[in-house]
Length: 500
Ligand code: NAD
Image (cartoon, rainbow, N blue to C red; front, top):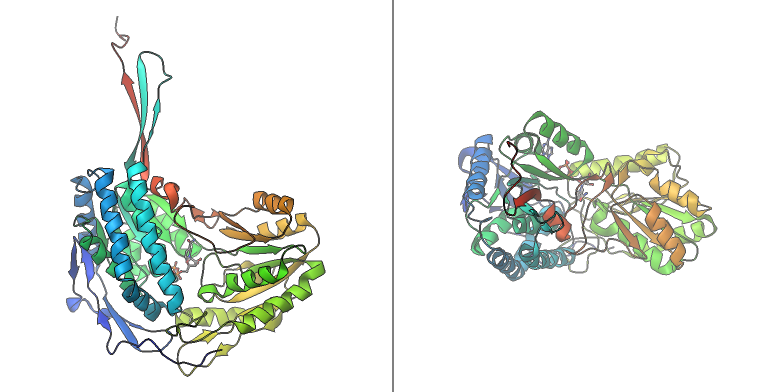
């Protein structure tokens, strides 16, 4: 494990950001600011405004005007695509700066942040094509007197609430698709990781997005977030975060204007390993699946379900892989696991590790706080002797905590995998195609990986079954999510009169 050896420098003073309304940055003024300390270094890195509900109203009004006067939705697909393509290019130009702020605010390794930012540029480039290919349907089989059309129209003003674990990536898994559909946006990032959302708003304006189409308000979830989900002039709310807040979003929609909802919530994702798998590769994938982003990942493979005949050997292999992962300063290019993003999350993870012990699970390795002199770090924990009723096996921990449970038959493995309120993602590791396909069909999850994990890209949709959410992001599904379908009946010739 690495000692702190900062190679990229820390900022000498925090950068002050304004919030973003109608194409302009608005400084905090007398509103007060959130001062964000780097979770890896404990030094102030950014200041973002504490927006008021009046600021939110101004942002929604700007998005409403921009939507209603059709300055964006009225453009043809080619013009919208051009803006999205330019945005991709500008993200590439500023990738180093965006990645730096992502690491400073979130604590994720700089090499990972860079890869995510380049992936985000790709999202915009891919979605530019979708802006041109979005289309409806036609019915030419309604008889000689009738022609039917189905058109797709943008939903309108979209509120977009994002979490702190992948501030830029999750944003860019939504914004290009929302814009491709012709909608306008009011985004509210997590109060601890707002910088890169504000940078994206600036980039979109520079790329030629008309004013008012992308607005960003910064503030706490309980105040500005709550006001956004309750706002009567927001047509759709795309929420990514905890299942707990997801429930509040559903309630708020029902109690206000029945805004359409997209929900991307929590997960407790199984990784099923059969004895016939390439176990070396599977152990590496399992270590990656729980260590990546310090396990603060909605799709982390946190429940390991292993065929009993290899379970002990496999646990040793995973332990050995985890011991070799480079944990340390996220600004160090070589680091693979950085800091835990918030103090509250650090406390939550450590309390689950204690709970696992208290419930009788056996801590095979890790689980201890790592002292690098500053910042908050936890060695990835691996628990054996876990039973399905334990909290560490059921609840989303959102940290580097992996539980192992053995199985004897494929049916048992599938039942264990499905024994959860969540249904976000799952992986299966086997060389047998029949097993791979059967498990893929029968495990209830919105994303599935066979002999790999956490693979992604702009083409395939993201979303959950069960309490992991509603709707899909990314791919053409992600654009269609932000549209409404309209049926059009067109009479050909003279209609049969009703009154004779
Ligand atoms: P969170 O639910 O606490 O917060 C998410 C966002 O909601 C933040 O911007 C927060 O400020 C805001 N918020 C909080 N309370 C609110 C309220 N009452 N009204 C409106 N907005 C409110 O989640 P988090 O701790 O930031 O993120 C971790 C959670 O997010 C985990 O459960 C994780 O699984 C989930 N997540 C899901 C996905 C996915 O795609 N399914 C992706 C990433 C994270």
